[in-house]
Length: 312
Image 1 (cartoon, rainbow, N blue to C red):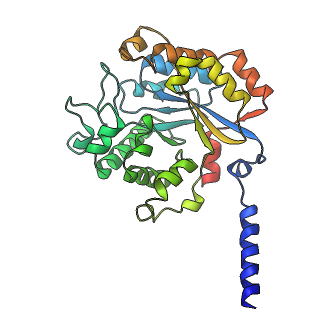
Image 2: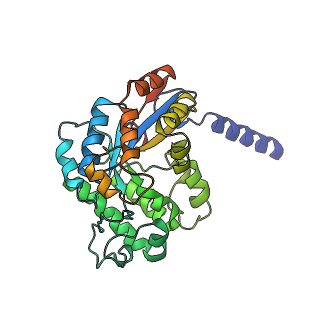
């Protein structure tokens, strides 16, 4: 009888697992549907970034973006999006300032988050320096300050994500705070299975208050590498990606701006992620080819706003 009861419980468990819905199914699609968020990072970074991103949202296939609140041009975004009430716009949690001549500091008081302030008085250039110097408490305080700053300029964030991945690849405590704030504000956070396996599961005590089984996870994040940019260029990379997109939910990250004097000055000294790269992204995602590839491959565009509804 005991063996029979064990077998019944095992069969029930297997059946429940087999019936577990994928994110695509929770969104009302089929398991094999190809769902895509075309996401422009870094709005708020510069005027060029702002107007090009808005143009790509209005005239191209870009359907999502996220804002860098510490940057000088973030306030302008609040004005530019007033005629876009349904815009999918998140907070691009920004803990670094990678540029050589364009500088910005934390939104929280420097005296409250000294570990996020480098020797030059601005944010550090890379995630490694952040992890070495910024305490989890300081990072959580800055993340909260950036979310609150977005609300103050009229933005109702639809999601959270991370500039340069510092939240994902820094201290695991950063990710715990990121998920905590996501739950607190009712805003979905960009998370995938790799983060669960690589950060959350190896730190069970740190994430003990988080229901890992009920986290909303996207299947994959896609972004062009510097090697791919050098080897094949943006058009070929994006064409191949759209032609070979897998089923499930993919977030395709890009960076939209014009190759103008402002962006050239901001990105001076950089061989990648510069003004030309951002213009190439703009050109592709506002092209007829991009629209054709999405239709030809039966790709369905979704947004974080839809994910937010099933996350509640």
